[in-house]
Image (cartoon, rainbow, N blue to C red; front, side, top):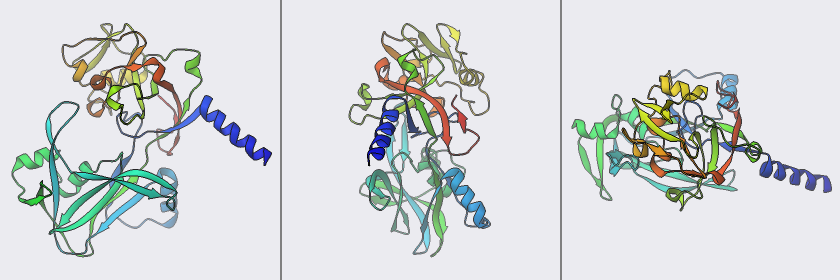
Length: 336
């Protein structure tokens, strides 16, 4: 019993003071790191052998979702008009209800999203983890060729079939027969990292490094503090700007590490470079105040970062990512 107590104490001490595991929640750092993603599965795909399935599970730790139709008809999707908090643009999203998901025989509870879709007025629920919106997967399945639900609405090619609790429902005209899979997809968890919690006690974070931090002291997240990972691009007294989708630090092109160079040269995977919005809109400069840092996501087009909610206090930095230890993809290994 004493040995067990010592082992538990050692594990807690290592996690608290030295190294901690961290799972990427969202895709704001893609393609450097990936958060939770999903991919449509095809019922027509050939059945893989048992060993292929086992290896696939080990390699990606994927989880399959499949919703089967109990009636014939066409698929209808409710759409809610909304404003993007990053740009105030009007868009359309598939609404969901926030629920509690029980996992591991009910021992673990987590937040989830419950979407409602229709097949000829019969309701079907599709559930995903809270960090995994399904808007894009619904669009890819039922309205292939469109880039957004806003584009679907603007096309005028789809009729409204009424409202559900005040929310407009559109008929996608996607045919379904009893026993068909309405939608099937596989959920892949985000990259899992080991975070070095020691180094920053002896040195300051460097520009270009990816950093893990808590949002406790950031006003935009006061009600629901989280842990995030972003890339540090500005330290106290640095002046930042974005021109031609390139990031400049103190009027010089940011090029202190491999990823900054890839973003500024718009290499494959980083084609969008840096998007000039929010505090770093075209023509705007930002100087980082004392005891604060400025962070950006590598997936600049789809990252909610310092451009929108401001600076990260230096005291909020938790550590520096060391290695991706899972899943076993081409990203496995030393963090960039």
